[in-house]
Amino acid sequence: MSSKSIVAIILARGGSKGIPKKNLRLFGNAPLVDWCLNAALKSKKITTVILSSDSEEILERGENLGCEIHHRSPKHAQDTTSSEESMLAVISEHPLAQSADILILVQPTSPLTEAEDFDLALDLFENEGFDSLATGTLDHSFMWQVDEKGNAKPNYNPQSRPRRQEMKNSRKENGAFYITKKQIWEEHKCRLGGKIGFYTMKPIQSLEIDSELDWTLLEELII
Image (cartoon, rainbow, N blue to C red):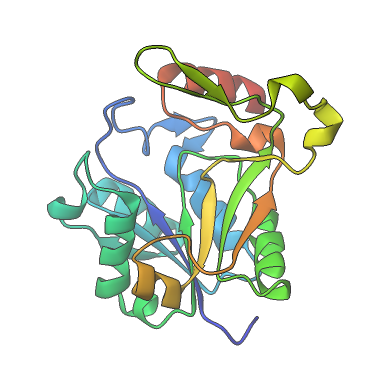
């Protein structure tokens, strides 16, 4: 895979509704955004790491760590802007993203992602011939679809309730990162398409920081 251009893109806005300026806030001994940046930079397989942000402070963090930067326009940095929109902006505007064969969308709110995760997932991606890949963890949850009136439908047969060991193939997406061929982005404008694979991470790595409670709990785990 070394002959291919593999570009990791970290989308890190300056604003945040849940936790103000969370990407620059110290998580443990470093700003939150540094965790995923360092992991991607330490990967043996990722060719280039691009940090995309509308914040000069955040972009400065990226420059200090030695990654490429992308100045995101206000249009692509709204609360309502999807990751797909932001990724497509980087792909169309940054020359190293434009020339990539494989793109990795990395989520800064998953700080426990390690360099080895990127490398193992890329091995899986190549060896199995996937077009895109999601990450997550084992999941033994009994999921239900419930409407506004409380009518409920389970994702299993209540008359044949599966045992935990029978749910070994069940996974829960954690959004830590997505690997996608550039061709899929061009054709589908989406992070997932074609032959989709899945990389399983450790349960603790599926903890995301979206609230102050998440922050406190996860920070306690790393200390």
